[in-house]
Image (cartoon, rainbow, N blue to C red; front, side, top):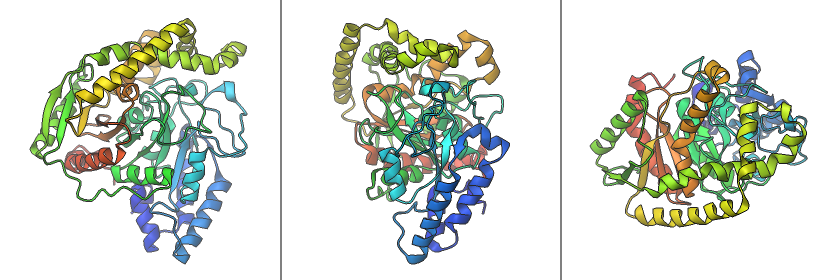
Amino acid sequence: MNWRTQTAAELGRGIQSGQINPVELTEAFLDAAESDLGRRIYARLTHDRARDEAMAAATRAKDGRRRGPLDGVPISWKDVFDTANIPTEAGSALLAGRTPQTDAPVLTTATLNGLVCLGKTHMSELAFSGLGLNPVTQTPPNINNPDAVAGGSSSGAAASVAFGMAAAAIGMDTAGSVRGPACWNDLVGLKTTFGRLSNDGIVPSCESLDTIGPLARSVEDCALLLSALEGRRPIDLTGSDLSGARIAVLDTVATEDLRDAPAQCFERALSRLGGAGAHVTALRFEPIREAMSFSGPLFTAEGFAIWRDRIEAQPDLMFPRIRERIEAGRAVNAADYIAHVRRLDQIRRNWASATAGYDAVVMPTSPILPPNTQRLIDDADYYTSENLLALRNTRIANMLGLCSLTVPGSVASCGFMLMCPPLQEERLLRLGYATERLFLPGRIQAGLVRN
């Protein structure tokens, strides 16, 4: 079987059984990533590090000392994670040559648990777009449409997995930057609860909302990756079942103005959930409109506070549409910012009360399909409208402080998203695993499972 199309979990089991050598596995991914296509996905490869880590993993496997189920499995890292003596530039010329001296703690933990670092992937500039378009450095490709963007800001992360140039990837999700690209490239993406994983050593976008999460081929992979990033025992997914699950469909905002393909995909998904014995009911929560209305000021105010000095010193180094979005934070005054934060805290408490009787809340991951790359470059209004729509549904979980998971639906570049309360990733992943099993036949029929 082609290693580059297997799940990370399958590769880990192959290493455990002695059928796969981590060194050969790593070389297979590095060879693929050194292609012209690979250069559109990776900002830089960490050849020496990957080979050293793979050799160490091979020795541990031979001696029966593997550190976990993914020990020896090669993955990619979004270019916001500090890597010792390797540039970390967050997709921006403003940070060209920025070279940290130490790894981000989350990368250190992953390495201690045996994950092999292949390199750093391209991304939206400073993580400030849900589209994945980056004319400054590189715009990674979309697996389903060569004329469309991959989604952002973890665009290269998604592409590295979808195109078989990494077994899995680690990204950052502030308003949907893991789940959006995962959705548009037929992958699983996990947004963890804010604070569950340390953000130290990560180039920030919006420090009060930045979260870390994996992009992978399966829910099992995401569960194993979370355990490797935390240094904990893997979550037990066996026995996951949807029978009797209480599922709420968020009707407010999230199901409005859906394009045809996402709408059809979502309806099929809900039908399958009901057929599996889940109790599916509609949920209206009007305060979410208010929270969405001030999400922009919160994002841009923090972004401008972080990047103001660099932007003002060299504004011409930035893609104008990204720069203008961050500069919008200049107009947000401190009183309004604090009022928004206080009101958001109340909305989160109201949400917790309104959803206490449900196991999960679901919605389409994205209301749109991946937009056309050239039109995004040529048409500023199209760029703005599609960027807002790309992040509309995913940012609900960020604003409400939830954990969230997207799994591929039955239509290419369409995803089904689940949300659970803070720090309930175990519940979320078990429900996601059962949902994935339910959707799998439809995905095969649609040609989404690539052998």
